[in-house]
Length: 131
Image (cartoon, rainbow, N blue to C red; front, side, top):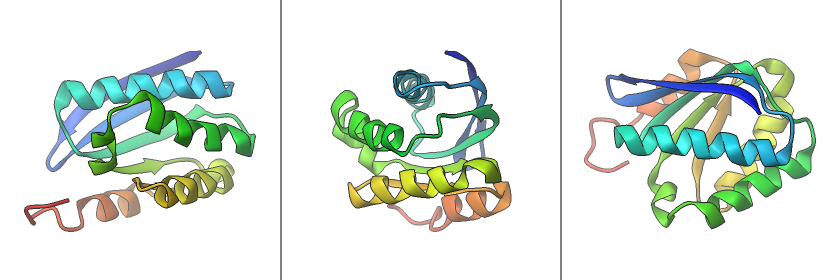
């Protein structure tokens, strides 16, 4: 896996930026571990994933396995995270597929091609006591 993951605390959320190439399902698992490590380090529950500089696999089964991986590899608290992933238009079919699987399994993860739309969705209800 040739990917770099960095993070920056922003008002109300954690921005995680991924750049590089995630070439396989196994590398998707590794990427999710890197992202989770940043979330835990910063103790945020609202996360904006800027994946505009990253390339991802283009097999639908990879995303089914990825969402299954979340349930197996991470504690149940990950279902309390609100995650907006920004991806290039080229990956939107896969992003929406990932989103559907994730939402159907109790995650609040959504894919966007617009940074502004992702941020708006992510910060909805940010002033309330619950996510």
